[in-house]
Image 1 (cartoon, one colour):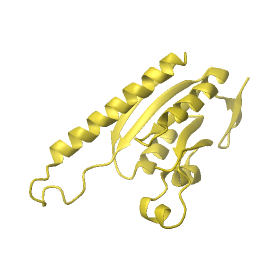
Image 2: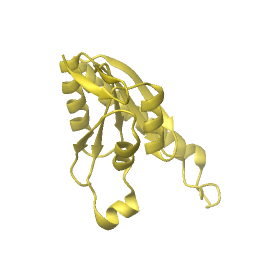
Image 3: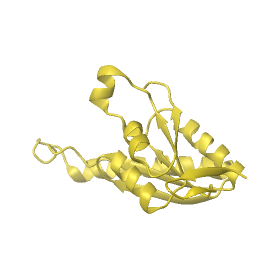
Image 4: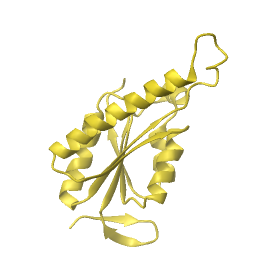
Length: 160
């Protein structure tokens, strides 16, 4: 039996895994790691994609439209969740849900969902960027690691 430590609750059975995904190359590795853990524990997987709202300059800049940009981001997120869901099913793991959220920053949404959904584990990717790249691009994984209400498995992805 696989177990995982939960905040203040001792050790419980691993039942629910949250898998946040973005469009980074290698998302398949994240899904495969989550599936291996879920299969061993008999857990379900919830796939989550958070797309950010359009830049605040949209609507001010000639030719830029919020609706088109938002629809494209939503459609791309839906396609990503569909591909990931197919991979989860092919691995023989129960998929609990697919969630597509429009929010910024993504890390807050991931942590909030982990907390309200009472997940036992988060499996997510990280590029392990350093220096200026980390300052410019931020680190969603780092913030989730610091603030998540449950353990986080960070899957190292190749630099994009």
